[in-house]
Image 1: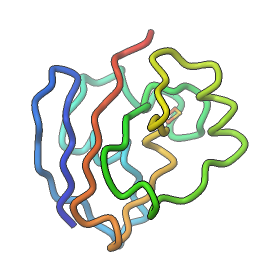
Image 2 (image 1 turned 90 degrees about the vertical axis):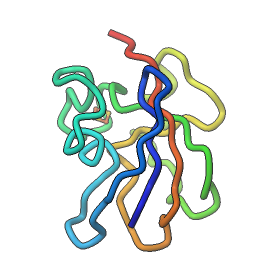
Image 3 (image 1 turned 30 degrees about the vertical axis):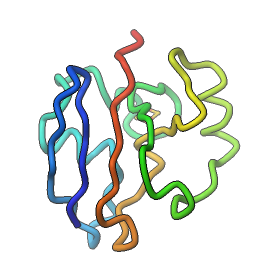
Length: 108
Ligand code: FES
């Protein structure tokens, strides 16, 4: 699928995201090097660091519900908005074609 990721500098990138690899959004960002190494995915996708926080700009109703762990982590994170999600908890599926997200500022 094609998704749009707006990086922390505000630049939009349309990238390919595979749907057959159980890949999450944080991994997509990393694979396209859209955030400097070491500033995203610090906990390895365990919903324990919030470095992968992003603002979801579309497809809200198609995303899975937040887990307790994700809610809990977002409660403790900085720059949280109503549309904040942890990128590592959003898995790439065909329904998300055209998804648009913006990376939250680095908080560490
Ligand atoms: Fe740590 Fe997503 S990578 S919470």
